[in-house]
Image (cartoon, rainbow, N blue to C red; front, side, top):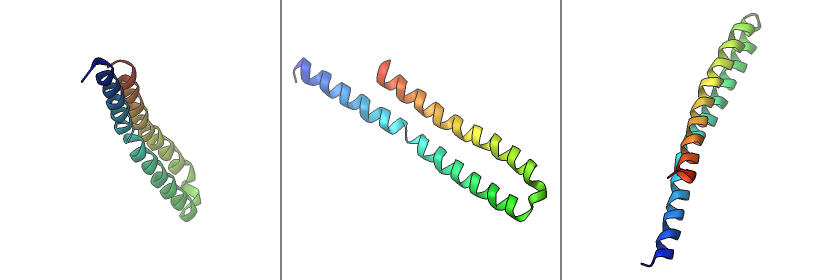
Length: 82
């Protein structure tokens, strides 16, 4: 294998690795969808508890979104640092 082919293979493998690292964003998206769906159902069943439910929902969304941001950081590290 010549040097140019090895470089092309390394770039391709970096792209595959970055794509696999972003698989964490799928879980975060699904988690946020389930969380918001549950919050809407809870508020629909008990409108008086809407403020507490909304506060907890926003906090849960922030934690779930943090996982997607970590996945993005790992993908960017794979692409541009390694």
